[in-house]
Every structure is written in C-alpha cells, then in structure tokens.
Length: 93
Image (tube, rainbow, N blue to C red; front, side, top):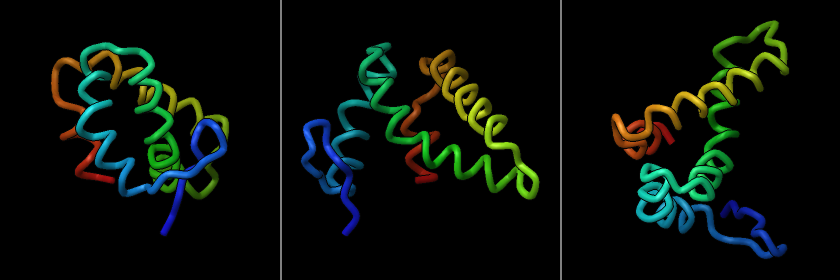
C-alpha cells in the first residue's frame, strides 16, 4: 500500500489521510483556516498538476503547468465559500 512521508519522517496510510482530510481539514480550509488550506494544496497539487500536464501535452512547458496549477488553487481559495470543495475534488480523486 502507498504511504506518504509525515512531517517528522514517519509515514501514514494514504487511505487514512484521505478520510481524515476530507472530514476535518477540508471543513477548516473552507472556513478560511490558512494552514488547513495549505494542507489541502499539498494533498491535491500533484493530482492537479498531473491532470493539467496531460491536458496540455504534448509540448507542455513545465513552468506553464506549474503556474496553471498555482492559479487553480488561487481560484479555489477565492471561491471556497461558494461551493463545497469536497464535492469539487473528492469525486475526482
């Protein structure tokens, strides 16, 4: 099973993190908690980058895809109170 490195060098189960993140941290991120939103970005940025990379390939410029990934999260943050991010992201993960 895939694991993620924790902040202090430990690992955690990806499936456990999915459950914990969706139920607790996501609600705080929607409420405007910046550390929670940062966790949201860290959790999903690889998935968003990969999706954009595939959408723009062939010939995608990595710097452009990184900028678009960042812009995606800025737009999510700006519109976080309009709709539930759990509905936007969890159904696609």
